[in-house]
Length: 253
Image (cartoon, rainbow, N blue to C red):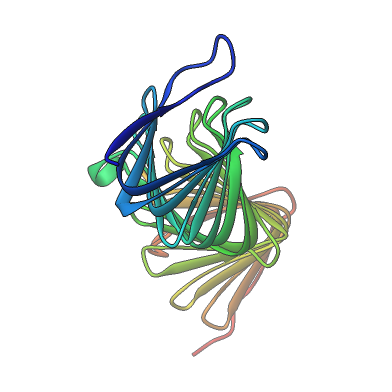
């Protein structure tokens, strides 16, 4: 059977199943099962593809297995399995998840063992060793919250940001993608070449090629050391300025 329409709850959008070579309905459980190469479930702008698709009519949950793909409004998700909860537009993707939002240089790619979130609010939580790629940025951590509406990502669990041969670590790192700003809070550290710094807070302004270290700030350049309340550095190390009781130790070559 190639095409069928699974009944939906009153007021809900119609779910269309296509591409199936086998289709089964169990009235006792209220479950539709479809198999295909792939089977395709469509509801409005959301399209779910997989070799196996299951629709629980009572719970209103679509489950795609054995290699699933979900597409919705400029968002593409690939995973071993995807659950789509029609009642509130929640999704849960598990196993080698790769989610991409946007196109070209503005696209954001998130990889993780598990991603859960809402197609309605465009907010997602990824767990279990997460990596986000966007332009020159690579942000990683054990847990990450991503807001696609504001293009903001926050990583925790030994987070690390890499950009232009530089590295930033902190207790928490937030990346504002459209502004090209990375913010590390709590035991923040910055390193590029022979330049290294630490502070309670580090902000990287990638468009301007500079960083600001605030709160017990310290910058080492080779064997020289500068401490102050706030230190501003060019990422290429050509300019360093300090404010608030600066102290400089210079070690002769």
